[in-house]
Length: 111
Ligand SMILES: [Zn+2]
Image (cartoon, rainbow, N blue to C red; front, side, top):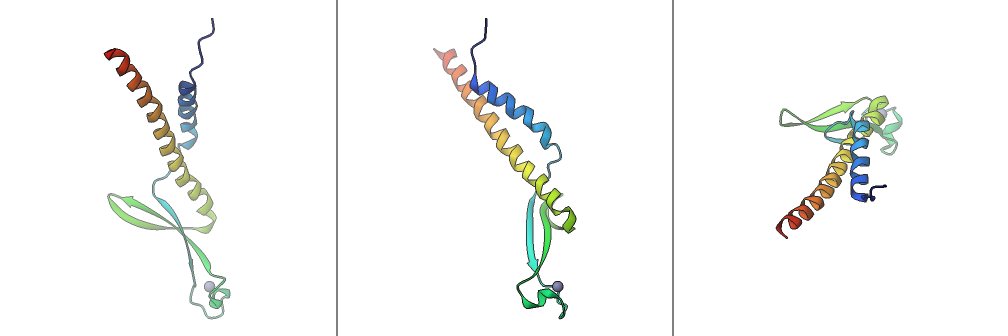
């Protein structure tokens, strides 16, 4: 006999299984700043073709810090910070499924 499909549980299982791929997540937010380096002969002196400077803003021991990130690292770090957002979204969706089930169970118990 086939058990009836429970879309909520399938969704929850899928979300739980997706969390492992987010194990490298990092906290904070990713910031890209444009700046001029100040050298008069540099291409950035025209004020348009500025340099990119990458930073992460993160709390370390409760204090906000802005950490500079080397350019060749920026994409990797940006993705790791995005993972945290996906983790939070998955956690919220899992809690949503569980809350729905909890409320249903509670209602049945009171009936
Ligand atoms: Zn420059």
